[in-house]
Length: 163
Image (tube, rainbow, N blue to C red; front, side, top):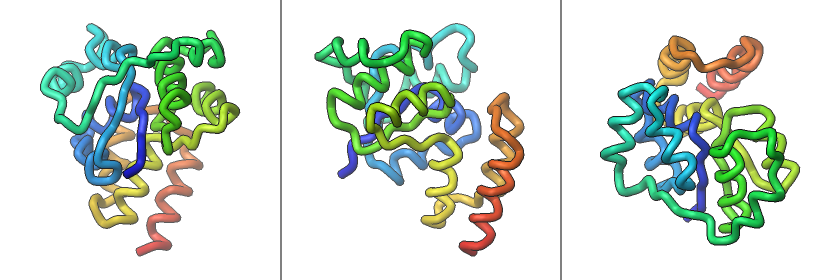
């Protein structure tokens, strides 16, 4: 079983588009640090996401880091959820981290962490026949998710070539 740590945004956006169940189907269990849990419960977080987190399924587990020194390896320019997620991934030697923010992804990769984002989760779900990627991407793009149109075009092209 793969050890997967998630930052805030992949969970947030997958909940918003009704595809959070993909995380369990693809990875069985998702670990988040308390800072990510707090971000998913913050007042500015959409009510749908806050409600989902308040009754989070058992496969989402909040795990505190036990070695805070790992967080010192991470740029202070990142937000607290990103820093805590990267630190947790380092500490538990995660197989994969779910994160969307470019600066966080770059920081995690510099530290040797394998990273994918919301688009990667959706693409993997489509590869496994769990979702229709064009439909899920349409829902995602209707939120405030930001991505360069060329990346969307490439993901859809890859999906079409697999079909």
